[in-house]
Image (cartoon, one colour):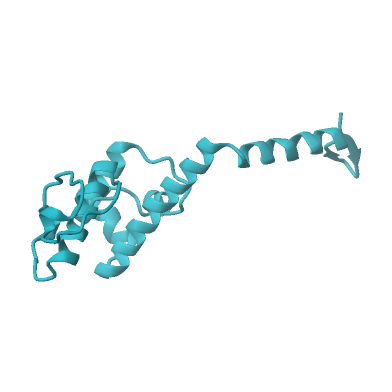
Length: 145
């Protein structure tokens, strides 16, 4: 039980230790780490895109029919985004904010193709086709697996 000092209640030493343990346990929680990474990553991507376009949070709020304070909360990096809110942000910005493993494979394949053929300009919509080596890309050397 806590104690009173000058009319204020202070937690006991055991209560303080319990709170500290809870903070450290939460900090080691992998789910919390993923949540923080995803949330802050999305907020940073939206903020960068707004800056790149010369837009403000107020502009985005108007576009999404939301309050400026709600957008500010979203961009704080601690908001629990729903897939629907991420989709709305993506649509408003015309930019994908979440990338799946298959998206990464498509991008990786496109980057390899650009490296092999730097004159190629339409690399954004290249379909992913698994390759065992670089023989299809025009070299005779095969990368060992």
